[in-house]
Image (cartoon, rainbow, N blue to C red):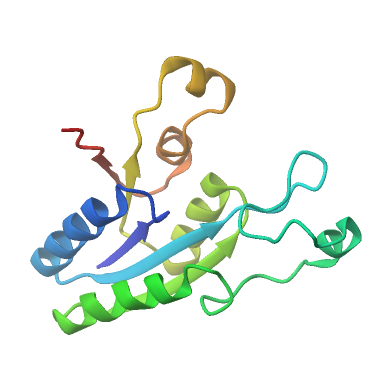
Length: 154
């Protein structure tokens, strides 16, 4: 059993990890932690984690896929993986660079995921109209069941 868990390090990440841990233990699943690094958009903005002083021509030259050790959140990602491993869950870390929906779908197919788990941020209708919803896009394109962890607002 393979569980692909997409995390973005938002306030919802801990809820997703907790749910993934519960499910992985019950199903004796291998967990693949996926963090997606959005591609840079030099016309609209710089990559969210890239220093603003990088010349635009350098942004265009960066075509390689990030490794989990190259992303700014690598320490967090590895820490989460270690925590899951210490609780007896076989865990692998994946970093992908693409739009979120495509990266999640591509990685789920690549690893042969039996389940995809991700969060829903509950943005408003205007946001969904303009930007769309990652979870909605994944649900529409997934070839396996998708578990959505809702944002619990207090």
